[in-house]
Amino acid sequence: MAESQATIAPFSAPMTGGQTFELAGRPARYTVLYFYPKDNTPGCTTESIAFREAWPEFQALGAEIVGLSRDSLRSHENFKAKLGLPFELISDPDETVCTQFNVMKMKNMYGKQVRGVERSTFVIDAQGRLVKEWRGVKVNDHVTEVLEFLKSQP
Image (cartoon, rainbow, N blue to C red; front, side):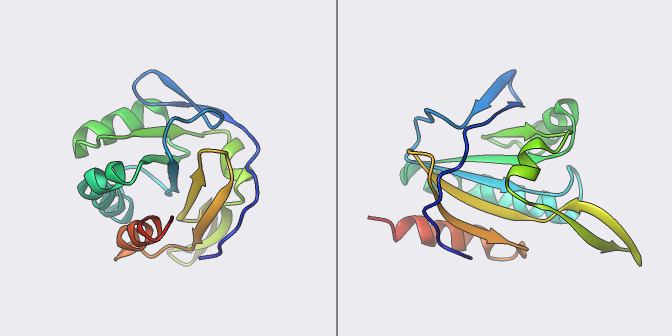
């Protein structure tokens, strides 16, 4: 849950809705970029639904939500439709953005070491500065923490 003022290097990546995400020039006051391991898994579904349910509150605070995983755009489109997500999902199969944010980690899964996305959330302001990050996120109450942080901003 570190607070920072580092500037994020501009990047672009394909996302749902036939769009390309461009960090530079985002119209929102804040971009909430959440990294999750995989579409249609229990924790990722729960987290995405929590962001969906809080979407109006984020919008009222001038924040845009964007999810990101290594899944394909097709998988993302299906996941987004299935959950009725009002925000877009970035596809990063080559791990370019994951590497930039240092979220690729070795994890234990069923007793085996596997390389995967560490559930993490980053809040980036309109100038492209990282203002808050959460790493190793536990799904329960995480969206509330992000909202509380945004509410505390001047």
